[in-house]
Image (tube, rainbow, N blue to C red):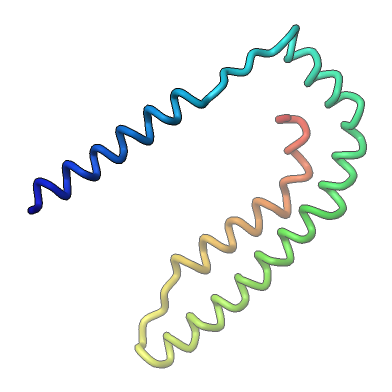
Length: 111
């Protein structure tokens, strides 16, 4: 019974792979894609930087700050209950918060 089940699963996977291979279409780029991407980036670079610096990073910072303070609070209550403070989750959230707070200073030189 177990061999039949394994065989039927393998058969289904094989049929799915064959159907996917038959109905997939390979897409080829016409021309130089890299220069098109670079020209598009140069045209929209200032707008993208403004939106990311003024909207995306503050939203991510706020979410991480809220998660950090909530996790510190829950860790404190767990410490009061069990007598052992868990440092891993607050430390990771704090490191992520520091990373995203300082990211606008260096992220654009990397990109």
